[in-house]
Amino acid sequence: MDSRAPQMHRSKSILHRAFLWDFGHKHFWKALLRQQFDVERTLAQVEQRAYELILASQNALWVLKQPNDPSQSTLDCDGFDDDSSSDTDCSAKTTSSESLGQDSIDACNGDVEDPLEVALREKAAALREKICMRLARYCAPADSKFYGERLEVIDALVRRAVYTDPSLMVASQNYDSVLSFIRDSTLPVAILSKLWTSLKELFTDEATGAVDDVLRPQDSNADYIEVLGGRVYKSRSGLEWPFHAWGHFTSIIRCYSCLRKICVSVDDIMALTRFAILTRIPLHQSTLKCYHAVEKSGILTLCGALINSLEGAQFFSRFSIDKYNGSDGKPQWSETESNFAVCMGLSLNDPKSEAFAQACAEEPDFMALYRAGVDAQVTRSVPKIWAKRIRRASTRAALKKAPWDDVRSTLYFRDSLLQECFPMISPPRAVEDCFQLAVIDTKEDNISGVVAKLAKVWMKVYKTDCIHELCDAVAMPYVDSGELEMVKEHSPCDGTSGCCKVNPFLPGTESDILSSYKRLWETTPSSVVSDD
Image (spheres, rainbow, N blue to C red):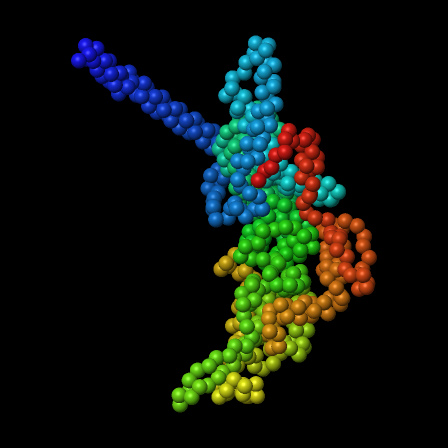
């Protein structure tokens, strides 16, 4: 036996005990973590107390009681992808390659920077550019007369992202404007990260408040707080928004269903829908839609006929035939005919609503049921509006000549059908104060044919021959009042060369994001940065 074996065994035992005891390093590490936690908690308490003192100095402790409802967040439906890892890495790589060359020069000169400081500086630069790019997306076209007002809305939006966060609020005390706050290259990563998160996970209520802060007249009697040189009001003004305000809303919130939540009347929904269609804004659509998956349905919504859903009617068949055994055991055949019913909510303030209802009632293929308000009297185009009827025969061939059973097997619509006309704000909330119209078609085999007929009726009401002229007829009142801007003058459609495909109305958002970035920040991004 080797004499060195006991000595090797003792050496292994000593090393094993050393790894187990670790000479107190593990305990020291745990103690450091506890101290770090205590320091961070103390700093958070100091920051919170400073935040409360700032609010108290402006008599604005009401901010601490502001509701924060996550269900109103536009996250995942604001038109921007929240996965920001790709562009962050891209920015970091570009900046790292640039800083690497500078570091090499500094190293040659004997001055080596702390790698941690370099990494934090690069991260802060990447976050700042993402914030600047996101705000540049909100800008109006440069030649729009509402460009300056949009910049004020952007400032108000940043203020609302700041005023409810203690860290951002404390950091903002050293600045007198939003631009000076964002442009400060010394802002730490933690502050920029919180600001980016607040803008990315924007609440619909805060976006609405930002627009209201700008459009409302200054009210010294209302509760407000001064942030970055501007006011953030506690409550909404309650004033009716002008038509161009929907350009501000749609530039920030890119989801049509989310925008419907801020509407309080049918006129609001009509204004939002018309602005989206006339300016062709690409909005996300989920539960509620301005463009239904039925051809020419956009004509109905453009003219103010708000329909909650049409998609389900695409799978509806007018006729169905069944075979069954009668009471005597002999085979019997039955044919069921069901009518298409389109329920619409219209504005009580639009004189064309009643004109459209009367025009539908005069159509030979339509039966109409309508009333001007919940408490108004119901008007019917015919005394009985049937929904379904059945006829029976002993053979399938005999069904074609069999009479419809109008007594025992016919179902009729009641006045309660008009409750389906209430335009939805967000299910199950709906606006009941509206002109309700239900149109029942007795001829078409599919919903597309019914919608085409309704679109043709709207053309007659507006006295137009094509969609181009119809858009002009709907938009001209807003153009004349200065609420909708035109790109250029255009001639009416003559019906011979087809309708003009060029959109004549100025969009609410600048399409050239790079130019918008240069115009807003007076510089260019250091790399191709996306705020997605």
